[in-house]
Length: 167
Ligand code: IDP
Ligand code: MG
Image (cartoon, rainbow, N blue to C red; front, side, top):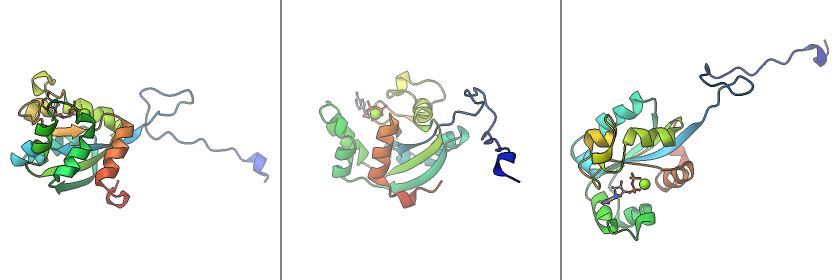
């Protein structure tokens, strides 16, 4: 039989499509995002409750470790906020106790995690969001999440080696 006689099998769709693309296949965007469970949350023993929000929403924790950030690490991590009036307080807060740094994986993980987190100020956060449920105030707001895929890649690389991310 010649190869011409063989029909090329279609590439199977990965899962059923709410919004098929032009060929009828799902448009999937599996992403990684970087998350921190902040010192106010570790102090109140909320790591498991926050992780449950991620997992129930379909985000997978593919890397995780509990660390105590050094001043230099916190200053560098929040370097974009260096000129903001709250910068010194923010660094003091982030080194005030242990944090849990994490890589979350899932469809549109960056945006999805930002939705789950809620607004920076818990007073403005939507009901059911992590910050509405758990945050103490605008600074001690329980979680960090990357704000773009580009920043996610930079932030993940700052805390994790590739070999520590196991999907
Ligand atoms: P985000 O965490 O929602 O992305 P950013 O504006 O990137 O918010 O601020 C980084 C962090 O700095 C916040 O999560 C919070 O801990 C702290 N922060 C932001 N705005 C204020 C403020 O007005 N006062 C005190 N701390 C703040
Ligand atoms: Mg931010």
